[in-house]
Length: 108
Length: 116
Image (cartoon, rainbow over all chains, first blue to last red):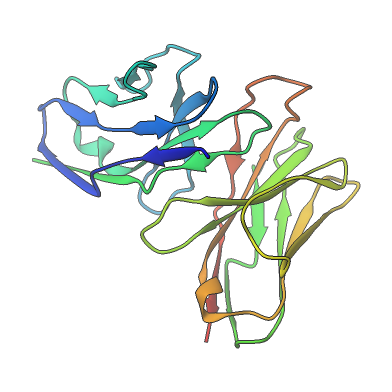
């Protein structure tokens, strides 16, 4: 069975501080990992995917197969980063398995 | 392109009733997936439609059924509604995996269903 675990429901940081949103997964195979973000009153949207190896809005995420983790990081948090973040995986067929999400709150 | 559109935005139904939710995919997309998001939870996969057929299904009872039309739009039907079916229902569209590997899924705004 595939599972995504996000241990923190809420993460509160000060503006300019580093951010790390944790994500661990369970999957017997080679999954593709994603981070989705939902800003206030907006739809769920893709932030980044591990195969792209991109930095989006200053965020990066590295897939660690040994630790089965895909943590989302940003060196300096901005106020506009406040949102709900979901880690997700797919083993193929575009079926996404989501974690329960972490609410990031960036305080001034 | 309006992206993925869902209707209605909100709905209130009584236990035992039936409901139909609708989704129009993003222009150019041919695959539609439906998700249920209960309060405080992440979206859970219900099923996926491609070429008018259900291709994958999550762990949901047969009360949940769907349909895809030739124009790729889709409906989600839920029969014999239970209080526990109250949730946000999300539709996501994408290209079929074979057509474009690792395609991005685009989500609609969702339909908020309340069962009383």
